[in-house]
Length: 202
Image 1 (cartoon, rainbow, N blue to C red):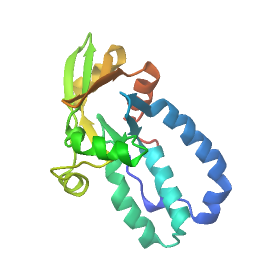
Image 2: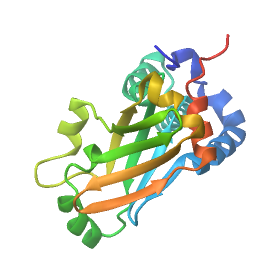
Image 3: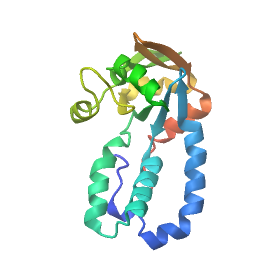
Image 4: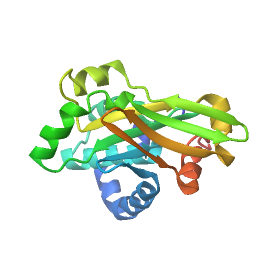
C-alpha cells in the first residue's frame, strides 16, 4: 500500500539507539510544523510515514521488542495511521490536564472526531472535506455519554481537492456545537502535507 512501513523499515534496538538523537531531533522539527492548535483545548498532529515510524521505534525501545512478530503487531496497529495518496491523517488531542477539565469537557465533546472539517478555497475550486474514522476506533474510544481525549481521524481529499491546495486558503474547523473553533493552516504546513503524497523513491 501507499508508503506503508514494513519490518525492514524498523531498526533493531542497538541500531536505533545509535541514531536516536538525530532521528528524534528531525521528528521534533517535523512535528513543530505539523502540530496545529484549534481553539483553547485541541491540537491536531498531521501524521505521516516518518512520525509513525518514530512512534513504532519508540514503542519498540520502551518495550524492548526484539522479534519480528512483535514489530509486525505494531505495524498492524500503526500503519493505518499513515495517510494514503491524497489523504490527510491526524491524531486529535484534547489537551485536558486536570480531572476537573476532563469531567467538564469529555461529556460535552462526544462526536468531536466527526465534527472536524477541512475547508479548501482556491482558484481551482472550493471543497469541504469532513473527517472520517474507522468503526473500530469509534467503538473503542467513544461512548454515548463521554468521548476520549485522543482520536485518529482522516480527511479523504481525492485528486481534485488535493490539486487545489497549492494556491488555496485551507481552514481546519470544528463544527461541534460545544466547540466552534477554527484555524487557517500555514503554507509551511500545507507544503509538508503535500510532500506526503510523493511516492517513495527506490
